[in-house]
Every structure is written in C-alpha cells, then in structure tokens.
Image 1 (spheres, rainbow, N blue to C red):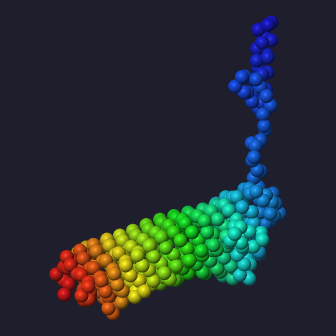
Image 2: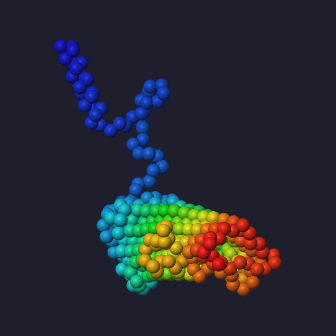
Image 3: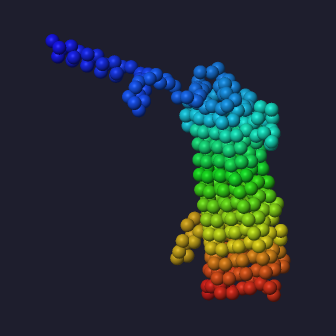
Length: 407
C-alpha cells in the first residue's frame, strides 16, 4: 500500500513539472524564491500586423527605441512612412514584405529623421532597416531618405523603380553601413551619400540606375565586393572625398565612366576591380596622391584610364589593359570587341606607370596629350600595340618589353 501511494505522488509530481511554467528559481544555498516571469529591461516587439497602418506601427515605437516586425504582404502607401525614434530595428520577411509607394508627387517611400527636423547637433542614432522590399514609380521620390542618422545600417533590402535615388543618406555622418542590398532601376542614383564619414558599402548589387553610387563631400568610403551592371550613366562617382578604397568590385557596361574622381579627391586607392565594357574606365578629373593598381580594364570604348591636367602624383601599377583576345588570334565575342582603350595622360604630371600590361588596345596603349611632366614609364609589357612616350627632359622611359608588332 505504501509503495502504491509513493508511486502515485511521483507521477503527479512529474505531470505537474511537465505541464507548468517555472515560476521559481533556486539560489546557491538551495532555497527557492520567486523569480521574474519576463526579462528585466526587455521591450515588447511591435507586430505591425496588429496595427491599422504601417505608420501607426512606427508611431508606437517608444522614444527609447524598439523593434518593429513587418509581416509578409504587399502594402501600398501614398505618403512617406516616417520614423523619428532612435535605437530602432525594422525587419521584414524578406522580399515577401513589399512596401509599394504609389505617390506621384515626388515623395519618398521612407523618411528617417529627427522629429524636430534635421539638426546636426542632435542627430538620431542607430536605426536599422532589414529584410524587406520597397518599390516606387517614375514620379515618386527617393526610396529611403535618411537625414542625420548616425550608425545607420541598411541590409537585405531590395529598392527599385523610384523616380529619385534608391537610397539617399544626407549627412549620416558616423559609420553608415549598406550591405547585401539589391538597388535597381531607380531614375536617379542607386546610392547617394552626401556628407557621410567612415562608410561601408559591401556585397550590394546595383543594376540599371542612372549612376550606381555617388559619394560627395565625405570621408573614408570603403566600397568592396559589389556588382554594378548596365547603368545609364556612371558607375562610382567620388567628389571632395579622401582616404577611401574602391576594391574588388565588378563594374560592367555603364554607358559613361565606370569610376570618376573629381573636386579635390586625394589619398584614394582603386584596386583589384574588373572594369569591363563601359563607355570609359577610370576618369581622374581632379585627384592627387591616389593609387590605381591591379585592375583589369577590358573592352573599354574610350580611355580606360585618364589622368587629367587637374590630377597628379598618381601611382599606376599592375593593371591589365586588354581586349577579348583568348589566344591564337581568337576573340571571345564579336569583332566589335577587338576595340579596347588604354591609358591617357592629359597635360598631367608626377605619374608613375610601372608593371602594367597593355595588349591589343587602340588607338594606342598610351596617349599623351599636351605636355606631361615627370612621368616614369617603366617595366611595362606592350603586346600588339603602339604607344606614345613621354618626351620631357624630366621624364624617364626604361625597361619596357615591346613585342615585334610594335613600331
């Protein structure tokens, strides 16, 4: 009888433990005491599906910040969605969450800004938008307009078909990060950065915007591992910016130049990019103290690399300037792809051109316009090309390898 009672008590205890929520905790002395049922300091996640509009969900974000979950679905908006709090994360269900801007009066899809308006002395901090899709129309404004948002992070977004820029960051000064986004078919620039500092743009795809990226009046752009294709204007435009790197990108079939440095750029490295079949390659309009290294310039319609009279002190090394030759007199694509351009030195000075390969580019491997001073042209390989040589007394041409086809 006693054994049966003990067994019954044991079974009841086991069922109770399995079917209940623990409400107690044990301290090191083995004494049980009441414990919290919710993590101290936690803020409830805002489920946007429980609100009548997306804007109502954003308005529910506490001033101290919070997280908004966007459900799957297509949500049409005819006025900008506005977020005015900081320490905010808005995350969707990937491209299954689609915000569609139907406005035709030039209004953005999403605005991030301080509730009292832009104020550089009191910016907002730490806003993240992630994992959803936004689209516009030819008469809408920008996709995302962020004004003075420090440490903004945009990742996993698809931003397409806007009448303005896909993304415009207006003086988002501290540490903006744009990663793993698809930015396509916007009438203006895919990503416009104005007055930003310590910028990361990585693993994004840009397709058929006007310009792909503009970085103006900024500092320290790091642009790596992106794919740019079929732009109606230029690829990467950097102006009045220093201390930046554009490396490991694929830039193809921009109708204008693939990369432009202008308005007092300096201390910038352009390295290990494939620059293919663009209207022009790298155009150094106003740049000093920059490096152009280990890039492949293939099938450029004009001027694969141009260094202008307002640029100087440029190192050019380890680049390949080529057409579509694949050996034994063959080209990969049609005969029109035999055309490929080389290096243009346009009344410039203090240029080192060392260790490059020029093969089958036209009209010449190197074109010299006007008077160029202090040019070092050394240890380059020239195959099936002709080339101008610097003639000034303070320039040096030495140790280059020309094949027998070079006059």
